[in-house]
Length: 440
Image (cartoon, rainbow, N blue to C red; front, side, top):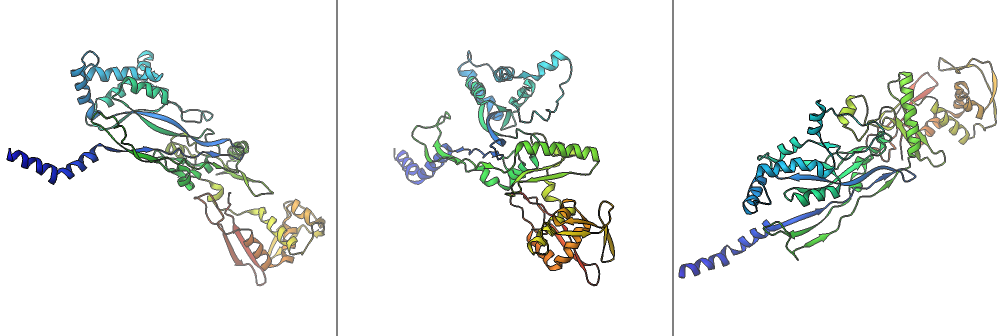
């Protein structure tokens, strides 16, 4: 009796607190309430990217045999052996989900199943069209594995029917990121990875705000796996991610992108890109490039096929060409060296630092207004006004316009443009600028 009392005292007073803490740790579970990722919309509210809730059907194969053997021993009429039960699951799962059994298709058609890519128009990640019962059976009987995903992208209602019939399976929440317009605007929107983190584009640059903040709670689980009533605590709700409305116009983006694809194919150009701005506000209505990857497909395969995940309009600096004439026009009028209706006598060519510069068309000396000089994109007329303006004013205006600077607000892949000053003669200096475009 003395020994028993001593033992009881030792358990309660010495190791009791440690055993109690260990038991608490074993039955305590942190349940995560995942936040929904914010949507990305165009200027009219059309969806560019959104999250669709689905389910994954999963199983723990390593503990499955022991569980099914115990059930068979207790209720042999309701539960078959491990082999019978796993075969039943593999056979009935396609029917419960309302999809084809790919193994039956192969047997009936006497041909191997070939996967085909969805056409560009079918540009969302769809529910599974079929599953292989033999692959399901193999996963169920993989006794070395602690976790297997049997089916992904399952409708929540169908997933519930599966776990209601086969309680040994688990229905886990799975958020599917959808890009309903395929490659249209993908150079701006980007894509998230399997871990739900943005890989490139807007999905990457605004990842933290798009993700939101997960919620959760703490509960205690009984030995049978059921939550203990009244044990819920530390509850904090999820905060869904921010939804962004871009300045893009989806219809315009689609049109410009299609035109670029056609122009690149017709011209044999290495690449093609275009930006459409609202002249009054500076908002970007479209920013497109040829051969943009479809984010709903395997990005690795898309890149191998020659498609790109970048955004060349902001990542590839280029010499702006006649676009620079707009800077000269603005500077000349701003500094008062000319007026829009002044008539200039513009010759067919002009000598500039030992170089003869001509217009794109042959002509003698003609009268052009300042407006006409830039309307016809006259090289000679532009240089005449640049001489009036002077070097310092030209440099000041080009710098003010942002050339040679990085002005990107939302593109992590952007590159800074560059301006090079160089002597072209004893009295003249020139500036060659490569533009780094920006988008808002």
